[in-house]
Length: 288
Ligand SMILES: C[S@@+](CC[C@H](N)C(=O)[O-])C[C@H]1O[C@@H](n2cnc3c(N)ncnc32)[C@H](O)[C@@H]1O
Image (cartoon, rainbow, N blue to C red; front, side, top):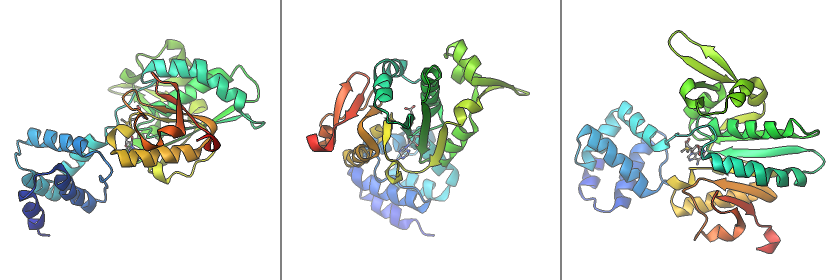
């Protein structure tokens, strides 16, 4: 296949959007879509990889990407940014547990079933943390159960999450009673891992899919943390509207610490109940 077209278009590039357009086509040829990601974010990743490879020209890098799948995978990995950890920003979990879970429990109908969605769950630490938090609360109460839906567009991340085995380092900051109760030690030949116990795993359904294609309904709380940050405003609006449809009336949305609803068209769809922790509540459709 000739790559001349890409080189030609890039030689005339000046604006970021044009760079994105050309790299968008390279990604498309590998079956990936970057059109909704923030252009500044993509450009930073391109610049970083080009710096490592000592490539100065975007057109040269586009050719490398087209011809070398391994380089494409390196770049793709750096874009997905699956970085996460257990109880990330613990203050958010502490305050959600103290102030939000009692409200969720008191608003549940007869079913007693709590429904949570971890959107953009990466390698699973977030949904497992949510499951641990809820199980710790409801084990002392009768008639409650918890069901967690966790999704990510990265198949690799979901496979890792489903496997539920983590290096010792990733749980070292967890309280020892949590480790004893919810993890089991797996001693390998070279390293030690910790597996999530079936009591936690069984509460979570993992799916490889895009947030926008989810058909979840009547969700009590959505954790979508450190995902919106990679997207352009237009895509953020679509995602936030989706969350509004999926939440039950009065349901909660938890964003990442660097994410905000401020200035978004759909800002009025959510009310900030704990602004510092980025915890919002769905505003009822008839009061908008
Ligand atoms: C930085 S991680 C955040 C993980 C976790 N939520 C946290 O805060 O620790 C972002 C994850 O969002 C996923 N992601 C990005 N866009 C997505 C989309 N449209 N649908 C589903 N997952 C998405 C990425 O693959 C990545 O695993």
